[in-house]
Image 1 (tube, rainbow, N blue to C red):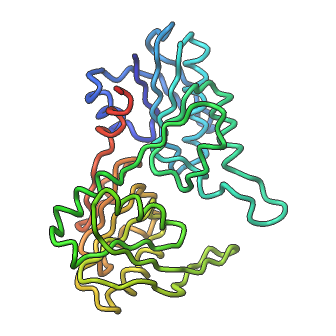
Image 2: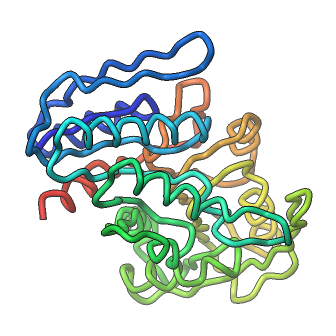
Amino acid sequence: MKIFSGSANRPLAEKIAHDLGLSLSEVENHLFPDGERRIKLMESVVDEDVLICQPTCPPVDSNLMELCLLLDAAKRSGAKNITAIVPYLGYQRQDHIFRTGEARSLEVVVKMIEASGANCFMGIDLHSIKIPELFSIGVDHLSALPLFAEMIKQIEPDLSNACLVTPDMGGIRRIELLKNLIGSIDYVSVEKDRDIVTGEISVARVTGEVKDTCFIVDDMISSGGTIIQSVNELIDMGAKKVFVMATHAVFSDKAPSLLEDCRAEKIFVTDTIYIPKEKQFKKLEIVSVAPTIALSLSA
């Protein structure tokens, strides 16, 4: 087995390789002045099981193209099986056609990954449980929820004083899965309205009993707007402490400063997306998904 990494999140790939007892194989990855990229695998992969680790996080299109080139290079070089490890999948929120005339962007992305040579796709906390159905290859859909469950039990041993919170109605299944991992704990849902043209979000209503300690759990944080509005609403309704847990730290330009200044106690995210030092802040805690990925690959 050999593991290669794209440029999007080499530190995570190195951790996965370490946990598998492997060394990260090298890639010649040249970016031309016009923005085109040339990929060359620097080790033979003939009849090998090959792992390609490359999240398609921002810049999404560039990282997606790099993933496809890595997959194609492995296929053309004689790899036996190729697994695309895509900890964060770009375009996953565009899994439906919302308005007439739109592309179904995620379906296009899936076709690109498959056509480039992947025999198996590995993702973490995909935005919808129906996304794996778009693939014609095997899909290993992993989750960071077990990591969050352990952290919640450490932070708040007395779960009678705590509640889980989903910042949108689409996250209720995620909350129910987390509740099964934790045990007896109540949950609250925050319903939001989103303008499909501008993307602006507003809180519509909160359902459930807000407890002293609240744990907001989501699949990703982008602008931070949904999270911050939910934190404010919960504290205004009597919560004493609010913690935020999200798998993917997409973090738009202003998100880190907004999250640092918000009323949450702490923001927990994973390393599915590489977070440079300039985007890290005091309230942020990063948990690695490398052991989760390595364990699944070893099974």
